[in-house]
Image (tube, rainbow, N blue to C red):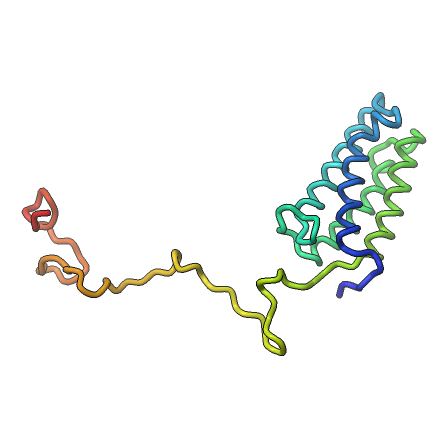
Length: 178
C-alpha cells in the first residue's frame, strides 16, 4: 500500500525532470567527462529519470502510462541503482561522480519514501459516490455485429446455404449484376 507522504506528486515529478537534466549535464558541469564509465552511467541515469517522469500518470507526466505503484517501485529501484552504481561499475575511486551518485541516491530514496503517489482515477473515470468504478467498454467501432441492417438486400439465394459464397456468385461467376 502506498503511503501518503508530505511531498506532492507534482513536486516529485518536477524533481524527476530536474534530476534527469542534471545527470545528463553533470559530466560536463562537474568535469568528469574523462571517466567514460561514470559519464555513460550519468547520461543513462539522466535518461532513466526523464523517461520515468514522462511516462508517469501524475500531473507532470506526458504519456500517462505508468501507474502509481509501478512508479513508486521504479523510483526505489532507481535510488538503489544510484547508490550501487559507483561500486558496481567501478568508478568509486573518482570522488566527484561517486559523491554525486551517492548523495543523489540517498536523497532520491528519501523523496521516494516521502512522496504522495496519487491513486485517484483521472477526472472522467471517477466512480459514482458509493458505487464501484465503471467497467471499461469497447468503443463502438470495435463492436462486431453479425446481423445485417434492416432493409438490406441479402443477395441471391444460394444452394449451399446462407452466409456462404457459391461457385456462381460474383462478377465472373454469373452472379447478380451490380
